[in-house]
Length: 184
Image (tube, rainbow, N blue to C red; front, side, top):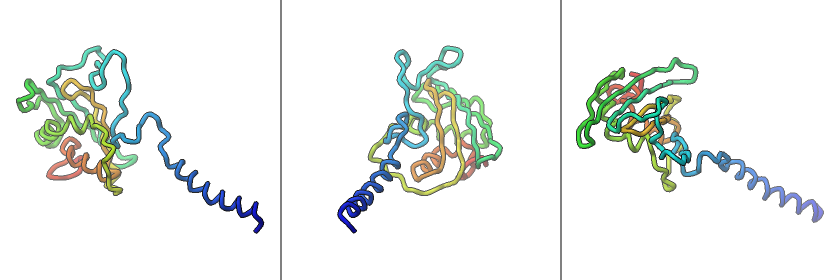
């Protein structure tokens, strides 16, 4: 092998892994590398702080209202399950009062939302967080509505260990009974 051919071979051998690594890098600028999977990227707004956008009628519900709609799809192409949870939280020191629900165990769903809603619906990215690479299933739950005056638009899935943990924490909100994963 002459010197030019040897140089091309070595250059190619070094360049291919670098290109492969670059291809694996994130290319979506709307979702930073330290974003929590399943969370929605924050968008800047000059007049309204994130999480407090007014509703379609122009006003956000009272800060003490929980009004959530849940759409659970158990597998691609499956018929989605729809749930709703509405509660009143007159004082942050008080427990929420259930006013409406179509969930199988509304008390458990409300307890999960009251205890973990802030962290689960509005996660703060943690660049040191490491998630196991395991697959928990094809289920996807989309939660929209209002949580104590903040607009909710959160997606839950079971695509890795961190997402499975988020799912289990909020499982009653997805229709889970007795430790199930959702939709009864």
